[in-house]
Amino acid sequence: MSTPNLQHLGQRETLRDRVREALRAAIISGELEPGVVYSAPTLGARFGVSPTPVREAMLDLVKEGLVVAQPNKGFRITEVSEQDLDNLAAVRLLIEPPTVRTCVPVIPEADFPALRELAQAIVDAVERGDLVGYIRADHVFHLTVLGYSDNRHLVDVVSDLRNQTRLLGLSPLLHSGRLGHSAAEHHALMDLIEARDAAAAEELMRRHIAHVRGLWAGGTEDAP
Image 1 (cartoon, rainbow, N blue to C red):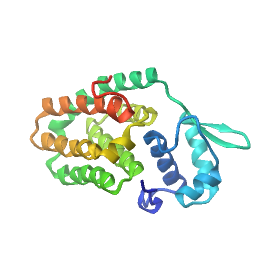
Image 2 (cartoon, rainbow, N blue to C red):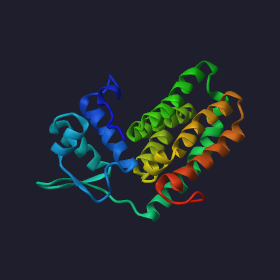
Image 3 (cartoon, helix red, strand yellow):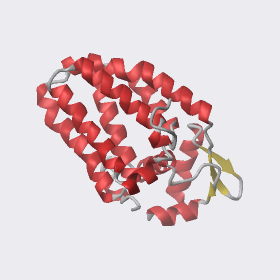
Image 4 (cartoon, rainbow, N blue to C red):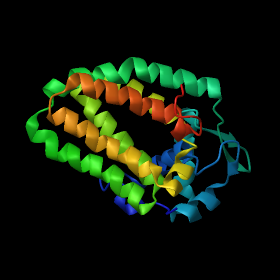
């Protein structure tokens, strides 16, 4: 499993922003384990940066509830209960599939190539064995699609729900090769978007979120 190159995570972002996004993705993917305390120097060495931007980024994540500061020790990764994960998935199911359905007819054809590139970035991350990159690329793709709803508040809510999710089953899926099939679902969604098949796109999103709560979170295929 490769550590992300922070230089490639966004040229317009500050180092603190890039570190925060990398840490958030590492938490969601389970690379940073729930309940474990990590020091800023240790994480700085892991991500190839000094401890200062790590501390600053972790303080941002404290506000989001992803980590808890441990005085003189570092930061403990917040644990999320199975009930919490069920609830997060339930809310996402209420919001994302119908929103995708409304977005499909209004996405400009001229935007299809850029969306394809975002979908391919997810596949590329899997091929590199980069779970942090996968989480980040997946986040960008889905929020970009939902952005065509022209509802900033909805996108913000979904972003927060996704950030609170834990996908602890991703590493086994990566090593088994099955994560590649899941990554390819994003191209399948693009096929439906380009075909303007809103109903099928909505149904695909329902299955996609079921994967998130099920296999991707270390559960079973038919969860939640």
